[in-house]
Amino acid sequence: MAEEKKTPKASKPEKKVEKKPEKKATANKPNVLGKIKQFFKDVKAETKKIVWNTWPNTVKDTGVVLMVTVIIGAGVWISDVVFRQLIELIYSIADKGGAEAAMIMLQNLTTLL
Image (cartoon, rainbow, N blue to C red; front, side, top):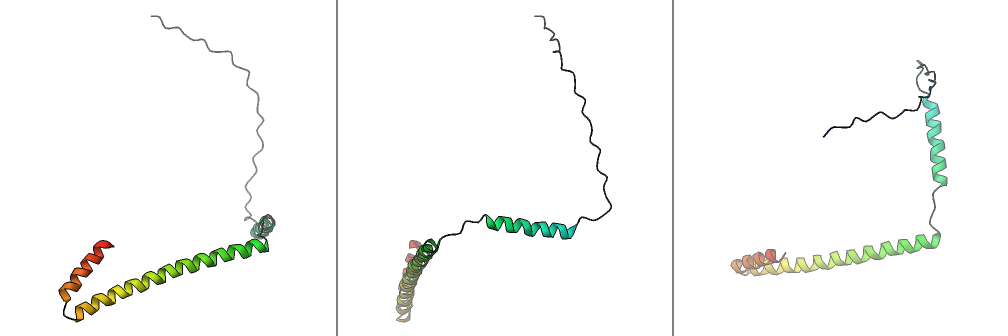
């Protein structure tokens, strides 16, 4: 089959783009004090955008945090007491001459955990 040659589409005349004169690089260092001043202006503007919680919401959220802390602390304390009693039981069995029984209990305990 013969390949058809595509004719280029008529292109639009190109617009002449005027080049802006390039700014000459100055030998001066950047104005550090101006940048610092601008930074603090930006910080001030951003702090005005902050939406603060109301006092009742703050008290409620603080109460929730304290309750969760107490509940988790109680859970850790209870598990500490249980594990301490288990360890004391194992050591008391080992002191009475049942070292073999204590080792078996320790092995069973580690497989459970």
